[in-house]
Length: 543
Image (tube, rainbow, N blue to C red; front, side):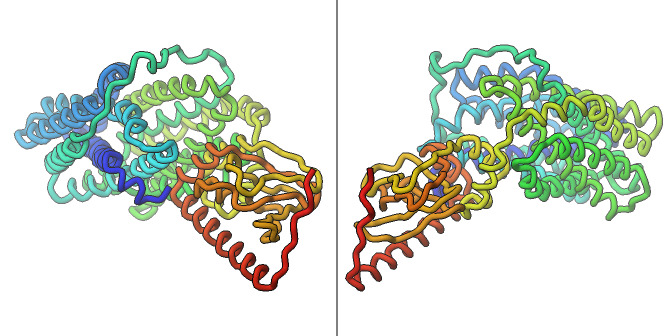
């Protein structure tokens, strides 16, 4: 699906615009509140307000999820954005009049309202999209909005804190939240029918994935501590203004964006080593922050921390998807979400305690030790799990050899590879027949096939070629008959999986359209040359 097809879906565009404003305000006010609290009570106050915002949010989240099902998700989204905006405005007003306790209380209200957004959106997106392919494309877009929003929030917070102070951050974000309310106000979607409500079951108690979940939870502890320590780092270590907490978060976000490209190297590989290696790299960068790196070195180290965190998330979550049975994945990830919230709260409590006991630089070293300890405890089990996990290496390599899939993200390419089914064909076998409806895409793994149109040979297909994409992408009957010239092996992918993968990722859709256009043009040219020469060769008779 092309980007303009998402934009032209006005309700979906409104939802995406509101979410972009939500992400920007969520992370910007988080940074600003930690800076404000640090200025009034040091690291202990910053950690305390972080926990005060996390715990009520964690408690409200299950009820927000139920409200998204039992009531209209649009109403929940509007109310959530409105309460967030009101909380941010009240926080700004309390800052202006010099009432920190009121500012903290209003910030807790705003943070608690944040928990309404993602459940409401999860229920709302399927009601707004027009096709299954658009659903995938919308989720891809929203994921990118979140990554870029985190990076932009750090820069925005830094500039505003430097130029105008914390009150300006809360005031601007309150206005952006009001704009988000206006964007989503015209949306319409009913509550889900009772029959469509999924039963909530407790997470499975299997110990299979505990080493992975444990390491990811330890990562959350480190991130929660770093949210507090980044202010300490800016003021006590770099001896800069508190506004530099925003700039450090910008570098952290930039590292995360860059590392998303590096994550492509994880496709088809065993993941225990990258997972443990990224955890070690993150710890080394955190420890380095305690030393005299200077401004430039600190920014680089923060980027490494952010990039390592992204790699830990990608490797850990992908490994969970490999080892958990399909029916257990939602519950496993639900348990992980709860533990992540708890880990963030623990980290926010740990950081000020370490600062009080030992100071800023030793606190960074203490936090840096968390991940290596968790990795050492689970190393052997992680390696055993990784060795037992099924990785479709051959299928991934085959898909990567097809130009249209060259830019597909790592989790998507691996998931697509798991959907391939090998088909062995003898020589002379008809794979697809001209004029028939298209129901599968084929990737040639071995052998040679011939494509015939109206009795004329137009193309030979070998390893690394795709077959059948024209009928699927253009929604037309098969444009040619494809028959094996030799014994061949192809991998089949059903229509829905193919279309979801291709149309749900904009660069892949662009490449696929280019491949189809070039193939149609080349096939038409060959047919014209054959017709002008007066030659015609019928394909050999099939069985």
